[in-house]
Image (cartoon, rainbow over all chains, first blue to last red; front, side, top):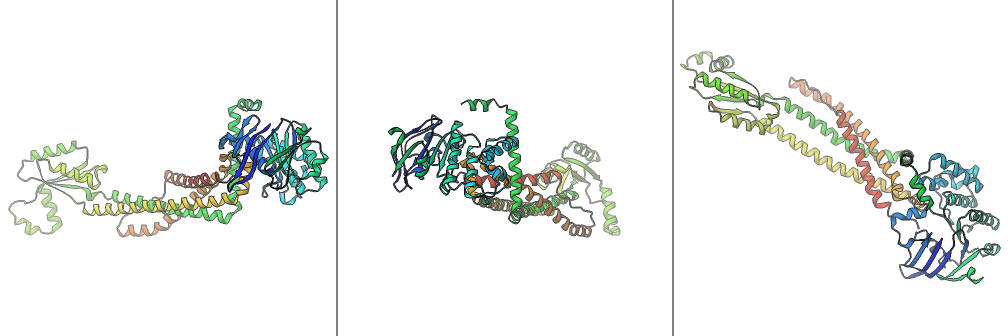
Length: 223
Length: 319
């Protein structure tokens, strides 16, 4: 699903964020990406969703070399990836329903299809009765679940989550991870960036560890 | 891959239908966005309306003054003074030839005797004139050109042509004042053009700037839309529709202001016309002109939005 081939990312001002990173996430696999703050976790996720382009090396998504695609193709690539952010990135002036519906509206679904699928997704994350609320009326955990509903609504091939449990207590975090597991069982590949080591320890998943921009430990390889 | 082929299979009609739905949805939601900030939106629309109302009112004035100059046709009559001492048959010959001129609408032959009689009547010099032993007046043909040949240049060309007729001694066209009037009208129409161009470019800048501010204040939303896979054209559309609505409503305002200004001027014009003993009604904007005004307004709104959108939407990228 994702393959990094000697990928480096150097920001202007010669700040090296990633250095010759190699890894391969299989189709339908679920993995954690971990490492201390500033190690390059976010940069790695940004390279997959083409928010950044690599300085060297190739990033493959679904067999396609995304570091070579044109600007006009990027939106269509992103439609196959559901992204979840620590700061949720919800539109505060739109209802929960509208927020979750965005990816479907972009893809041009009919109003009826949108309604059915949005309500189903909200039901899955336990926010069915909050459809008409606005994001500021919801708690942090609830907003995070809205973000998840938005990310999975168009049934993407891959889910990327950047610190999805950042501000949540352990119990809520566990619930969120359980949701990811559920989507993973339905066939979606999942990559979760987190520095919540306690959470990772409770789960038995492959863990990619990066430190100062280098992939230092890929636990699957160790086993 | 499977999904791709399925998407291609979806009938074209269905896709057009969906695209149409998207457009309607975005058009309506931009209109509600416009109403969400009523004061700011109204100001932009007023700028558009007033800026367009001025050229369109000037245009109405111009159009009517052109009508006036065309209606006063008699001064463009051409007087042909015929050579004396020619037999009457030569004059008849000339009149026959005049009938074949395509430029000539009608003409009137005034013989020496008729001319004398009229001169006596109008000058009051009856006793003095009877002292003359012969009639010094030439025979005259008053030629009225067809409307198309009444402009000063065409009338002058016709005059030169008529003067080449062998029976004609001299032709005369009283066009000085007509030339002056046309000169004034053409200066005025140039001024209208310049004012219109200046106002329209300021409209373009003002509306473009408003749309730019709209885009910047929706930065977060644009970023999120791009994150979930919206194409640039999808992100642009609401702003283009906003420009469209600014133009459409601004156009209606421009029309209303023009109607009001014409109504307001009408009294003054009617008073002036009465001083000249003429009946005159101002003709306001006709249907095709109103449509042109709307199309211009919408075009201005759309193009200023397009300029801002092209420049700024591409610049906003999520991070």
